[in-house]
Image 1 (cartoon, one colour):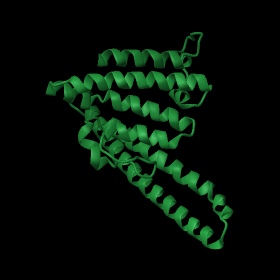
Image 2 (tube, one colour):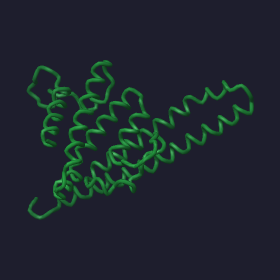
Image 3 (tube, helix red, strand yellow):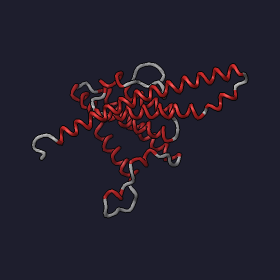
Image 4 (cartoon, helix red, strand yellow):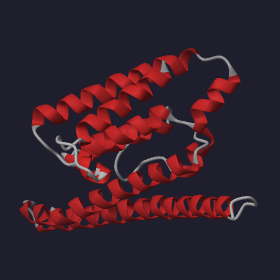
Length: 217
């Protein structure tokens, strides 16, 4: 069932990226993958979101019934549900819904109680044992950090709203509170992004080890 979801997702991605008429040069037949994260028509965006949710539900339903430890290990090494949730979060970011994007990413690796927020998402140390793929871990941290950066930027851009307070005391309090929120979001972003950088560097080091392995000369 999980493999069928993977095939369906790959087919959907190729269909969404295909330019139309084929060209002699293969790369020209497909649009860049970044175009998937670009906000298009509302109906198209909603269709993609609903399709991703169906795939996520299907994979979760299978994962909940797996008792074989080897199969569970395989899903940690190829965390399909996490990858699908990352794609879903990208759609939410594309339309500016940072709160929902943070919720989706957090639930990809964290099932505990408590509300999630762009400046309060789970750190790597809380969930790294659930995902064996270092590349997926890196992308998860990168996305969490990026959302926190966008959240801090949004808070800063809306600082003019503090001037609408009725009294000078209230304005001062709101300024202090906003500054604290920006600092908190920036600090969380930095922790996520530092973790992402370390994970990407580890993956690159592993690639160098493979390239230098005997028999590849």
